[in-house]
Length: 108
Image (tube, rainbow, N blue to C red; front, side, top):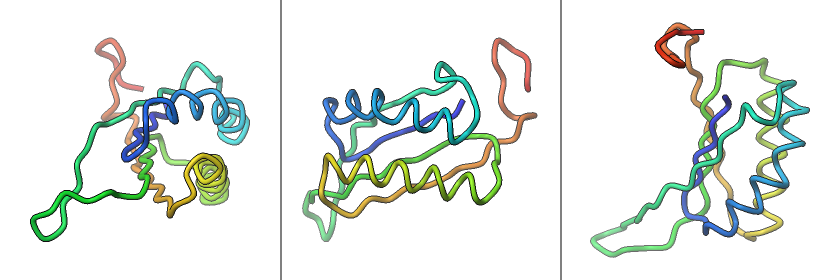
């Protein structure tokens, strides 16, 4: 935990980001690197009946952190993704409750 879900990026981009982001995010969040997961989600976007290209969207699912930590993580992700893909970057945080997150049948 945290889980990063990436849309509108290539598998190669996710591979690169999973290496480059990991130490930076672990430090920013103050957690071990092996707590992170990176997931590429295959998506198609449509506008007025036509399939269209979209800008990268990165969703971060995690337990709530202070605003300054969230801002720092958003900045790190945006900078690293922009270095690979020169486009608008959307970062979305979804806060999970420890009571609603189970690992091997036990919540945190």
